[in-house]
Amino acid sequence: MRSITNPLMALLLLFTAMLSMSVDANPYVEGVDYTQVSGIPESNTPVVREFFSYNCPHCYRQDPLFEETEALLKGKVEFARTPIGAGRTSWILSQEAYYLAEKFKMASQLHGNIFKRIHEKEGAFTRKDQLAEYFVKQGVKREDVDKAMSSADASLAISNYDTQAQLAGIRGVPSLLVNGKYLISSKHRTAEELADLVTYLSELEDKP
Image 1: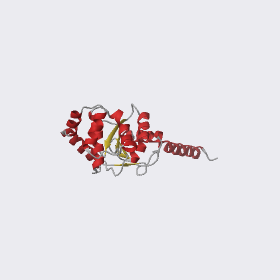
Image 2: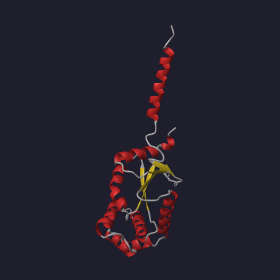
Image 3: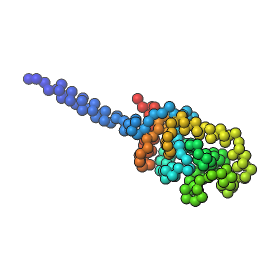
Image 4: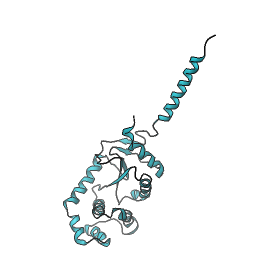
């Protein structure tokens, strides 16, 4: 009588292999969920960098989603921001607004307020004196604001923002770049879904 042990064993091994492949299959697809770009060097990883502009309506609407995602990944992934200038005067002034908020250690309290100032109240900054006055109203001395705005550090920061955007291949905002080289494709996601994708990409280099 012919043994059926070997065929059964082969079938079992095939089923096990298929199950393993299903479990190990990547949940996200390059070219669909993200693209790899030449990117930028990040001093720390894991990190997700948001490219944005305070003048961008979509950035304004998406900001609560990014804030919620950041909260979900607190202590696991560092969040950073790069403001985009796009060669437009009002957008460059918004880059300066971000620089000043960082300079005076007011970024956490002013980030949402600058969005609201532009999209709900007075509109975009169009002159440097408007921007300076805004920070004076936040309690910063006028001489300190003027000094910061005319400093070499401010010029260097703006130049660095533009260089980061160029190296990352940013074509629109908001955009998210993970670990300096994985650009998340633009599509609707919940905070939980976005956090899961960010986590996946932040660990991608460690995967076999």
